[in-house]
Length: 529
Image (cartoon, rainbow, N blue to C red; front, side, top):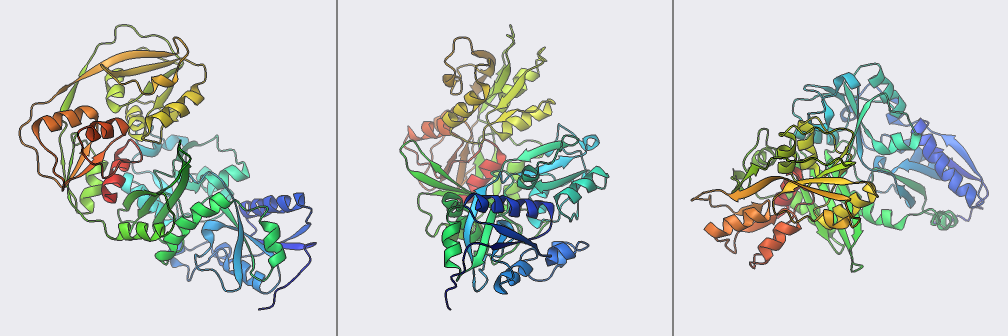
């Protein structure tokens, strides 16, 4: 194929005509203008734009929002196509290439709720049996996994149209990509909003990223667009989209994949991947978390793990709870789950409550024993070490302003300290607490300790024989090892660094650690061993 040497003095940019698509095209045009390159805009209607009365399941083929734009590129009607990367098929159209990708806008999902449909005590703040608008099978499978009572209703249209339908009370709530709302700068203050971490509610591969597509023969344009390319984003979404490619899937597939590349204190990089895969929209998803130093063949390993999760017997060192997600998620996929807390907690009465700006909880027990004493407290912000602790706060009608999303307590402590600044923090805690978070607060009087409970070991004799052991605290490790041994054949999951260190001191190998301090993190760890 002959290489075209077209002068870069008149680039025609092709885009869909929605407000978000036009924002995206304008964003790239502004970047090109800064490089001294003038552009023109051509709006192209796609199948997805033309057909608004059918769900994605009923649309034929792939590339609902991209096919016509790609045809315009091939026919030399435009020179550059700007796409939402998640809309593109994973098989490159012959003659076309992705020349560059943008920075990544927040890939989180956003739930917008009409205020009369809010129940702060429930997951995602949604009232029981709420009608939620979404046409995404991926979103449906993950929503129903956590809230099987929800009534999911088809929702089509561009971002402003969807929000208007919510405003007209056609739904109690809708689910959107946060990126679209952020980019358009839409005022959503009239609604209650819940932004969900991409590590909890797994987004579509490449969600929040723009793809710049050109003809593969336009070498000069390719070279120019390298000025706009975010190489690190390209590296992480390549893993996400390769997983999608291996499943030969498109936007109808109930698959979420999210990758982060993180640098440790030694300067080494690790790729972390969260994945959720269901058979269909109303099927309970398989949920895993994997990490690696090398990206080569990583997508294949992710797919292999999702396809070959082996049910096993599991013992976790905590009691079953009402609507226990850990038990539900594993049992549905054939795991036999046993639970028993090897320790118990006892309330320590609050004698004096010092006024602070923040209250931080490092465990669900701290939340429970603090609020059950009905403390007289107001005008404070709440922090939680993880999602599980923040959900416990919801039960007492409170919402965490800060939530840690790492089992590395040092990282959580640093993040929380940067949010708090010079403000004061109350730490309700267990007697003998390790005070890992407080160590980041060196200003005298800034961190205030308050003992609200103490732990003691339970009396127990027999423990179930299990292939996977899940330890939730150092105290449970100590209690277990006093009565039983861990065989080399058993796989051990440790919740957090402190628990892992307690196990390692006795020579026990850790098979997996959950990425977050909640039931979902534990499920992801168990399914990944």
